Image 1 (tube, rainbow, N blue to C red):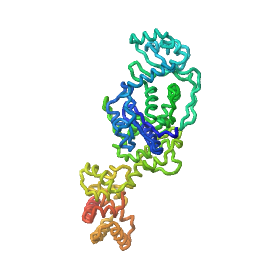
Image 2 (cartoon, one colour):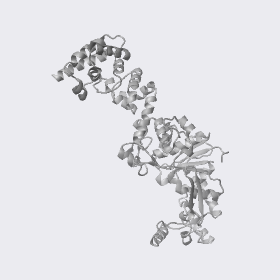
Image 3 (spheres, helix red, strand yellow):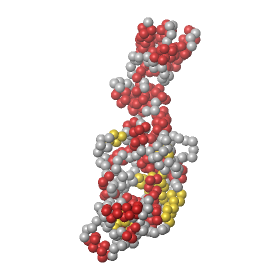
Image 4 (cartoon, rainbow, N blue to C red):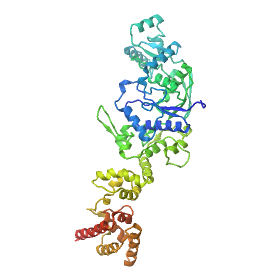
Length: 511
């Protein structure tokens, strides 16, 4: 196995939007492939046409591309081992199903829905907690194991509907080595004779999955924990075909923030965070679900957060670029236990990326939000505003929404600050300070700060008596970024005008 080129696949079904747990599965596959110089494939498993949702496949591709997880092969990506949609491969699966029948590993089953229901009811009455079509019950059902070859051929020739079932060995131990969990051992008496080929001419997931992984030369199957119960059947199918099985790795679940159960869309709706990478509108109901992209998350922050939900780098490092994740990733450091999703930690990751982003890039990103608020500012102005605001923001939009004073003079003044700090002599002190500011030619933050400190010393007043009042006059707020940086950005004329008008308003309000 080690001599082969590493090839992994992400194989979602187009039955709706891609859950963030699915994105994590794709990410781990991508990281593993790139770490080992291999290929990452996207395969669309659309054999169940009854559950197909229009737009879901395009959503999956768009979501992966937004995250930077771009497939090497797949629908619309090219590759030598396609088609990469199972519905376009359906002609090939029958041949493999017949091969299993001919080898005695599968059989034709003609049971009607009524006969299957009757069998299950009979087993329930006999005390069975999990009535199954298995090595015991198949002996009393209508299939090619209980019928003669002539009767079987006649039923097929007459067009009687049938399925092809796997013939599960009786009372054998199946050993599956999982790269995350170690050895998993299951006795076949716990397993049923799964349908491999349906009466509508389409394969089930189990057959199509194995055939595709083999013919696409997949070396490692990295998938969600929910597929672990299917692993013994898949190992038996590989053995039945005489093929070498890939390495299996089943990833832990993403859990709700309280740790009780799998993270679902309903949890996001209830607790106010997205569980999908992009916005999604259900074409059947019109119901909208929010995505990380539209909520203002950086794709790099989203991916960084997801990577650490279930994988531990073994170091204190938390911030990783995609390239650093590739270099650090290993399946051996993926945990068995479910990983609790923390929406506050997700915001923290976004905040870290926001703080480290170049101000000029942030200016481009914030410009549409500023415009939506009805303002136009130069890129240079917005870059400086972002420098001042990014330490206090988790999302780009917050830099515009939380700093209205960058675009217009305040009309209201923070009540708490005014009540606590605006005293009888404050107006007089602030007018004297304004005179000092009017005399500053180079209206830089450092010059303003020096003038301010000299003023305090000269007048014998404390910073706590003056700075909060200066802030409230210029911005209307009680807190914010560096005051002298804000004034320098606004410029002398605007800053002085705001101070003078504010003094007048607050004086009039006090009288």
